[in-house]
Each structure stands twice: as structure tokens, then as C-alpha cells.
Image (cartoon, rainbow, N blue to C red; front, side, top):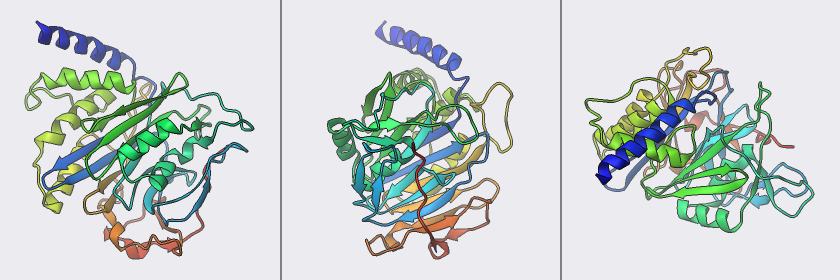
Length: 351
């Protein structure tokens, strides 16, 4: 009887999830866990317009500011990182040299706290939120504890090309397989922290996404699995395939498996459905091998993946900021460490 009640409750929330996703842009993030401490985070970036991505290598010791006025948080990066930017104004995705991965995904329900640029509470631009985590923490537990003890006021602004505010949640995973999802709901930080929180998509809030997980856990994924690009369907597929694919310590097999999962959850290129902005084409995918410290990037138009080996990047304080321009869908393949070009760091969008 308890199991039946749980299924009915999950089905009810599942229905609410289906009805509540009409106004969100789409992304998927999934963590693959294999034997011998193999941990890999894959994500897709789905967006209607082009977002002009670039890949950056940031060294330690960078002086940063939250870009939201006098009360902006200031920090010096403890760890080097490789990130993918959007419009060269925001960090959307990346991995630091300790194997910590941060990703931002759209969440229309987000409501950030009131912020006074001249007040005492430290603020940070939404565009720099993921970078702050990559710069300052080595593990999920460390990040969660510090952000709860020393909370920041996240400040949003209009999305480039739109008249609406950017609203996202932040996911974090580490080389130990720990996971956390951070959301600002009704002006308060809500943290979901557990190694089992391996799959995240878009709306609704993560507590309701966990109900989707419960609902599908009772159904045989090899016989019944939704196939559309809707957020709840992508969540179901990612959750099933993350454990159904071959679990291997072989780097080629595990990375290939992670790519196969995130490709399965992607929206085919050029697909846009009127009235369904959450069904937007996948613009790019990343796969972060947190055990071997390799950051993979794939553009559907560029055809073949490229990757950066973080172990061979100079992240010392004397190192320069470097960039790999992928904004025009340039064709690269294989390891591209030698393609990084010294560049002036981009400035985060702020007030």
C-alpha cells in the first residue's frame, strides 16, 4: 500500500511537472559514476539563439569582483579552471584543477534576494556565480558549507537579446562523486546536497524533479522510456541511461558512455517549436572527466569532439589567461591545448 501511495504521489507531481515547463530554456546535466573512482559530468546547452561560446583557461591568483556595485564580493582565485563562457560575459560551465565541476541551467522559478549595492550584504553577478565556485572550492561539501555559512546575494540582469531576467540554478559535482543543486526560491537559498543527485534539468524546482525520479524508478526503462525533448523526458532518459550504460574504468569507454547519454538527451539541431521555448536546439555539449582532469567540448556543427588536458595546463599565478575561440563553430578535433591563445579575460555582466 505504501508503494502504491508513493507511485500515485509521484505521478501527481509528475503531471504538475509536465504542465509547468512551458516557459523554460532547456539544458541537461548528468553524472556518470564508474568503477575505480571514475566520475564524469556531462551537460548539454540548449538555447534558441546563438550564445557565442568560447573556452577559457584561467590561472590561480586572479583578482575577481562580483560586478554589482560597492557591496560586491571580492576574491582571489585559489584554483585554476577551464570554462565555457556565454557571450563572453558569463561562465556557464567548467571544471577546476581539483576536479570540481560547476554548471548553470535555466530555472524560471528562481527569485533572488533583494540587493542593496551600497549595503553590507556581499553580492555577486549571476554571470560570475559558477566561476566563484570553481575559483574557491575543491569539493562539493566545502562549497555547500561555505555558501551556507557565508551566503552571497546573487544579482541577475536581462539575458542578452531578451527583455527577461536570467533565472538559473547551479549544479556542482566533484571527483568523489558528490553532488549539490543550489536554487534561490522566494529570495532564499535552497540547497539539495547528496551524491545521488546526479541528474538535473530545468523547471520545476529540484524537489519536484526528485519526484520525477521516484516515478520513473518503478517503470522498466528498457521497455517504457519517454523520447521527446521536454524537460521531464530528458530527466527520465538521463536517469535511466546513467546506470544502464556500461560502467567502466576504461577512459575511452566511460567518456564515450557519458557522451552517448548526453547526446541522447539533446535536442536535434535546428529544432524549434513555436510556443515551446523549452524545446531548443542543443548548441554544445561538454563532458568533464573528473578523475583524469580532461574537459571535452562538442559542437553539433563542428562534428567531432575536442578536449583540453588540465594536467598539462599551466595554472600557476604567473600564467596568462588563454582562450580557444569556438564562437564561430570552428572545426577542431582531439586535444587542443596548443590552440589556446593568450587573451584578455572577459568581464562578467553586472550592474
